[in-house]
Image: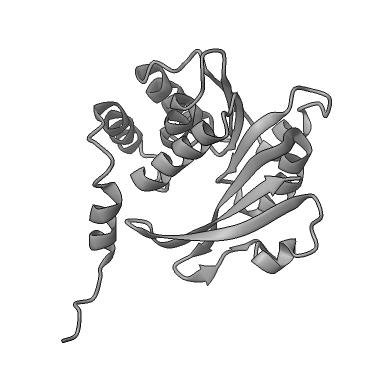
Length: 214
């Protein structure tokens, strides 16, 4: 007997059965939609993964490239201990405003510092001798992803984690401008150990890069 084809909706349903309803996150999604932000945030399952990862490594400082409406930032900031900090980089002032609203509604404004401007310039402005970050999440400014990754290696501590979203979309290797973030790109990178992890759900077939700074 042939098994029925598994749909994206099936995967989404099974992904989310361990994630309870969350009025705060739902309100943030609704606020982002009301303000016309694109529907490109991580899924609930991906957000929960980021939260658990940050908790697992005991992250106290996180940098996020591409805050959009603050959905993933809310997940990540919830994982931070008292005194922890998430620095969110967002090029679009309107997106940053909506993100700030949603983060405030989640009661996390004391943990999140938003910087508006081009992400690469903001990353480069972080001094090398500043306290290192425990985690970096890169999810925006596609054409500059390779450069963002280089900066993330500079500011993330040894043993820290760098996540790059959307290295595969719809089953195809993403092309950021003309620069492909294929796994082969990191085969000779002596500064990280990395793999790619696939996901499927309401974001269809996706894959992110998981790198640990040596």
